[in-house]
Amino acid sequence: MFAEPIHVGRPNIGNRENLLKRLTAALDSRWLSNGGPLVHEFEERIAAQAGVRHCVATSSATRGIEVLARALDIKGRVIVPSFTFIATVNALRWVGLEPVFCDVDAATHNLDPAKVEELLDGNIGAIMGVHLWGRACDVERLSLLAERAGCPLIFDAAHAFGCGYKGRPVGGFGAAEVFSFHATKCVNSFEGGAIVTNDDRLASEARLLQNFGFADFDYVTRAGTNGRMPEASAAMGLTSLDSMQDFIVVNRRNYAAYDEGLSGIAGLALVRFDGDITSHYHYIVVEVDEAKSGISRDMIHRTLWAENILARRYFYPGCHRTIPYQGNIGRRQLPVTDHLAGSVLCLPAGGELRPDAIGDVCGMLRFIVANAGDIAARAASVDRV
Ligand code: T4K
Image (cartoon, rainbow, N blue to C red; front, side, top):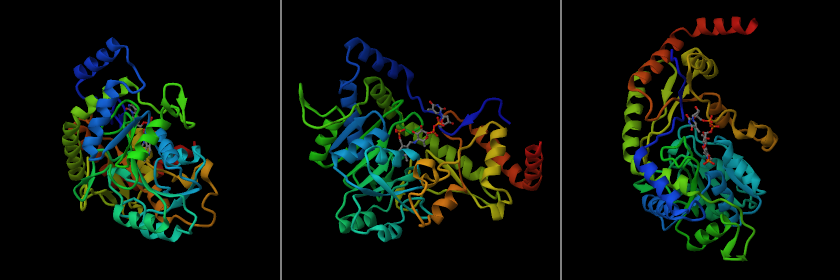
């Protein structure tokens, strides 16, 4: 259907001229990293937008989670969803923590507080929620559980910069939250992340740890790492922030176009972002109910790819089924995670997408479901050859 591939994570660029001006200023000043003026400005604007006292910009969200875990001195086992991008749990493992995979809620795709409660065995170092697709977790119930367990609650907010919960921006929940500003995110800094918190001590500890542990020139107090954001990334991040509201307008338009285009296709349900949350509508997430569509998510995915529509099976197969974590859950089951990992499909989105391309993608999905039997038979014959 498409001569060129269309993607899920096509980056938003923003105002090119402003980006180039900022990059030129950084080059002229000969200040390219290590807490330069652009990073300071970026941190101030992120903190203001997230409604928190502190923002520590990092080289990625992955590194941000690692630094945060060390800054909080978390030990041992961390309750975390398996239905997330692998970076969430790799970051924990990378700093010697053990993920305790918890099932998610079928409606929200986020940690199910009832399932978290079952895992509280007096030996939990932290609870880590993930605001998947930018939808905020049930922060009240998770806070109560963390309080009861006597452990910190932190959030992987990689998807959620610009989102909110009950009128409050994501960023100020739990002990701290970590945003991603990777190229594929609504606001991007090429690569980048940020730890945000209202805790003064935690913020200064995180700042220390992302700069090798330097408390002053020649004075190292902790074994830190290099988690700093460079000026070039901050230049992009600031430029992206300038256009964030425009990006969200386009995202909403894309979402509305998908909503209309997908209506009435049997077994395909667009994930809704309503209720207590505010969304940036950056992710177009569809759940496939094979009993109604007559065709599996994987066969739909395969057919879309054949047409250059590069939909993604985020987050298949679930972290607990990846090689590093197989065996981690023992005999426990994560039925909702397994179900979602087999039924969710993310569709192309972003500012680059022409509105008529969305109509074409929906038309293709309608065609696939209407011709489910023929497509499955054709695929089987291709596989036999
Ligand atoms: N926690 C969660 C819940 C996350 O989702 C993520 C990252 C993290 C933590 C860690 O954040 P960072 O450490 O990255 O800051 C992509 C992103 O690389 C990753 O950042 C993101 N989540 C994840 C959901 O998506 P992949 O492996 O799917 O990337 P890739 O290369 O397949 O690209 C995705 C799509 O975007 C493709 O269709 C190509 C397109 N694309 C990508 C880039 C980078 C472009 O068109 N242009 C580009 O420049 O992980």
